[in-house]
Length: 209
Length: 209
Image 1 (tube, rainbow over the protein chains, first blue to last red):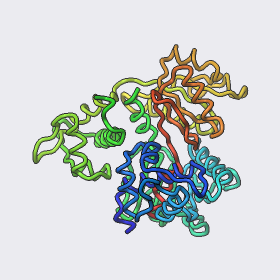
Image 2: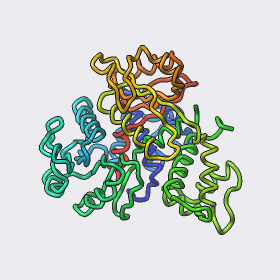
Image 3: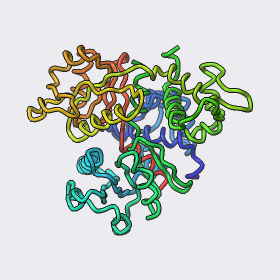
């Protein structure tokens, strides 16, 4: 099942989950596919089609029970599992990401992403710490990973270093990456990489201005 | 025309443009819809449908001329217009974004996004500068905006301050925002806001791990 769902559907399910979580609803609150679509910038037929892939959650004329649907989405997405993260590159961006994720963990109940490792190659950075997490040399990746069950590598190194860093992390067993370096990174098919690209976000916005 | 194209199509066009730009192609290089789809994680029929909205660019059995299609996408997206940016909030994230955009401007030919204003309310930050751009008090937004033709506000303030900052910026005439605060911000219909949400990126990635 998991591998058959198209990526674009997964992305929309994540958006629906965020919307439902933001709503702060009570046990008797319902939402229509039109309302979800409105908040997600998707048409209501698409919302119904996406959710119907996983069963019949909605009631005709009433909509979806917000908490029930949220829990279903959490289950579908596996969004109740803690997932430990290692950030490679603790320059300004890496530091900002580490602090951001740590503060989300503190302020959001059940926030599942936990920064367990920070890595750099700069001797001035190795040995320092950020919000209690020590910065280790990249060569300690395998050891730190194993003892902390790190599943996701966040790449916050300069563009020219990104491919090498990802290759190295893959060789040490990391299978999922969130890449902030402004470069397209090649990975084998068993590895998953997600790009977070400020320029693409700005390009999309710029179209409307 | 501009307002009739669905948002999801625009997002895909931005992805196609990035892919074509990354390819570093020569004048005789072609690409098939299957190859574009493969790089964009979209099926080839969708690629053909998206591009057909704007005319017949491809040749049967040969594909699309890479440079020609790239130029068409630049035109459709208006991606050749310089667009000036103001960043509100120069904490770690705002500082990282400012430096990132400035370095992209220096290393990427025709990079269109230019940081022209930095804003904060912290007296320790106002008066400092980042890569030559002075940090001004948020109350100077209107004046700095007007003299620098700032079109996009990048929101890098804490979640609890984000809505107020956006309201203020809208009242001063900004119509486009890229929001990094982990909160859903309400804007009137003539204003466009794009959310960049690390947690959603991680959620999507986590599904596959």
